[in-house]
Image (cartoon, rainbow, N blue to C red; front, side, top):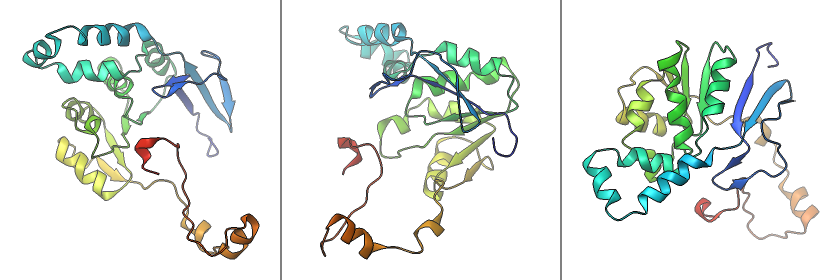
Length: 213
């Protein structure tokens, strides 16, 4: 946005970790020159899939029909057709889909190519040891993208092992400026918080069990 680009972020006002209570449904706002639109996840599809998966024999049936991974991705959610319609209505020259842990939304986003000829960029942020990163649907979704951005060369190699995207995967890093850490002020921080000489571990992220804090 600082370079003069017109940037719109389309997201939900909730996640698998719970609703964001302070965000109103679909209320547009502008943050640092970036337009933001939030849509309430449509829970009816997710609930229907969850109810079906609770029925005896559902897994065997879906496995036989080779659509079990699709139903698992839809079960996780979020399902949000309005956000995809909004993305198409922006008239963007480029569409990027970020964080594929929310698989259902990435799946819907990957279908944009079937509706409109617009360059599609994937920023999947894959957790290579997690089951969702090994879904059988990912190769097809990745193949629809014109470019894939990886945090590390390791993730890049993993992506290339999943889908025929040779030449379209680029390692871009995680947006950290190393110069910010070249002049550490350890003694000042220790004195400020009374930490003494014990080892100190810094952590930035959600305080949830799967992060392994």
